[in-house]
Each structure stands twice: as structure tokens, then as C-alpha cells.
Image 1 (cartoon, rainbow, N blue to C red):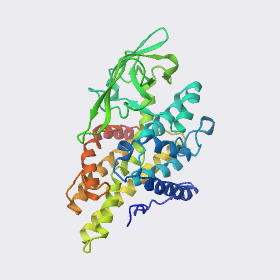
Image 2: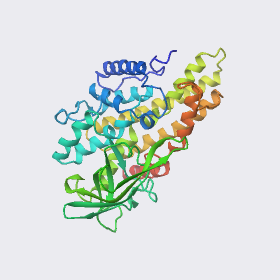
Image 3: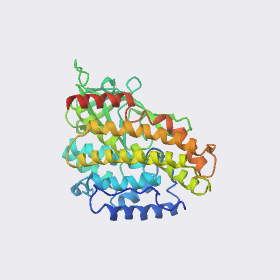
Image 4: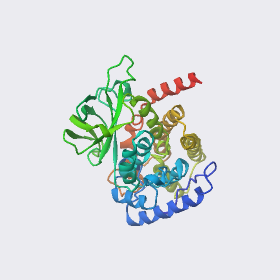
Amino acid sequence: MSPSTPSPIAFPDVALPASARRLRAEVRAFVDEERARGTVLGRPDSWLAGWDPGFSRRLAGRGWVGMALPTEYGGAGRGFLERYVVIEELLAAGAPVSAHWVSDRQAGPSILQHGTEEQRRFFLPEIAAGRCFFSIGMSEKSSGSDLASVATRAERTAGGWRLTGTKMWTGGAHANDYAIVLARTDDAEDRHAGLSQFIVDLRAPGVRVEPIHLISGEHRFNALHLEGVDVPDGMLLGRQGDGWQQVTGELAFERSGPERYLSTFPLLVSLLRELAEHSSVTAEQLTQVGLLTARLHSIRRLSLGVAAALDSGASPDTQAALVKDLGTRLEGALVDTVRGILPTAADPHATPGSHPELLAFALLHGPGYTLRGGTNEILRGIITRGLEQH
């Protein structure tokens, strides 16, 4: 099987729009073109580690960034399910989508839902064109997944707000244009109250970005220091004090997409290619691959359900947390199972795209799987509360 061959695990288009099959073929053709350019390397975690603004702009030129945004704001008006097809194919191929990832996945939809008309007119067309990139300013050093305990404060000024505090694990802050920052605007007995969201210019005075290097040495994340950053009134996102409701709705976008079960998918594809070249594949090996594939398709069905709910205007927070919890466990299990089936030594210096190199890449990124988007313990609390309410 050649590297340009589409994924050997087909994604059925059941429950997707009739146009999905045609759209999927279009995306695969585009990916083949990009692969020939040398931009699609087939690596795991491409939504985090595949930074390529040029690729993002070419993707936007096809109408595949901001797909779910209305046409009046520069989007394609195609909805979350059709966007799902595009994202699925890009992640399965290991395409470099991280430059526009947060803007497309959650900043755009959040601004559409909560932003002022002026904010929509200013930001959304630029996002859809692949020219405006966002970071997430949620987690803090002593907060982690417990967002209600954030200490970053926003104090009233004559013309707006002054933000002071530090956000941790702020992906892409060293290269992006803006961040949506969660800050405390009021003291309240209920720690979920008194929070608000702000759109912060990452090049504004008082913004200091400190690199956080991964165990691999990669610079993907940062500590985002807000040292008295002045934010005008017009950059308050939504209503003052509604930050908690807004951010939990935003997390439904972050926790439920195909990235929650496809981050390590290129490694599974690589395993199948390696096994295809072996003359003696055991029944036990095939069973293990089959179990992985079954888990993947089961989580995909749950994820599709969340996308359908988002299309209908619902906020499926509990379902999204379930997808993330199950997907996170699959990501780790996939790496461990691949190592057991094919005991190849991981080698980060091996030929790019080779099985040893992909395995090393997945192993080095593995520690982050259970952290980003909320730890499994936090997610299970959300799931439990959601079930109790129903």
C-alpha cells in the first residue's frame, strides 16, 4: 500500500448528508495534491503539531475553514456534519491543520453565538479565509481542568478592562493573533459566577509569551502572561458574568470532534501497512486490530451524534465529555497495542513517515492525551452529573 493511498479503514457515510460521499472524495483529492507538495506527512497529532498557515489558507480557499459559519460572515454555511467529513479526512491523513484549528473549531462558533455584530463582521470572515488564528486562554497553573478556580482578573477601566494573570498551556500563542481568555470580573460566593470571556490581541502591550517545551523539545505551548493588558469594551465576548456558561458550551466543540479518536490513527494505518508486508500474521494480531477498529467506530458514532446535536442548536456537554473520555483512552490503548503487535523500536530520527518515526512521535505526545480538553477524572464528574440530571 503506497503512502498516497487513502486510509485502509473506510469511514461509512451513514447518518451524514447525501453530499458527504462527494465531499469526502474532494477532500481526498486535495490531500493527495498536498501530499505531493510535501505538506502532508501523515504524522499523529497533526491538529496539534502540524503548523502550516499556507496549508490553512489553501484549505480556506476550498471553503473548508469556517464551513459551519453563515455565508453572510464569510463561511460556507454547510453545517457541522459536513465539516465533520472534512476534518475526519484531514486528521486521518495527518494533515497540518493546527494553525487554524482553534479558530475553526471553537473561536468562530463562539463568536458567532455570543459575539456582537461588530465582532462577527470583523473576525469571522478573517477566520474563514485562514487569515486570523486564535488560541485558548482557559487553564492556569493552579487550575488545570478546574476552570471555576481561575485567578486571572479583569478590572474595570475607563475604556474597558485591564487583565492580569497567567494562562498555561496556551497553544500557538507565540504565533497566533488573538486568544479568548476566561477571567474573573466579579467576586461571588458561587465560584462559577463572576467569570467573563475576552478577546485579547496577542500583540498588545502587556502580553508576554513564555515558551513551554514538550518532552520532545517541540514548542507548541506557552505560558501566556497578561501583565496589565488593556482590553476595550468591544472585546468583551458575550455578557459580563456569563463566562462559565459560555466556556462550558465551547468545550462541547473542543471535546467531541474526530480529533478525540483520530490523533493516533496514522499509527494504526502504519501498522496495517507493516503487517501487509509480513507473511505470517497471527489470528491474535488480527483480533487486536479488529478490537481497536471496533472501538474507533463506536466512538465515531458517539462523536457524530454530538455533531448532529450541534447542528440542531443543542449544547451536548455530557455527550461531548463522554466522547473525550472514551477517545482519550483509545488514543493511549492504540499506541500500546501497536507496540505489542509489532515490537518495532521507536526512533524519532528514522525516515519521516516510517513506522519507527511515527511510533516515536506518538509516544512522545502520549502524556498529553489525558490532559488536554480536561482530565478523565473531571470528564467523568461531568458525565455523572449529566446522567443524574436525566
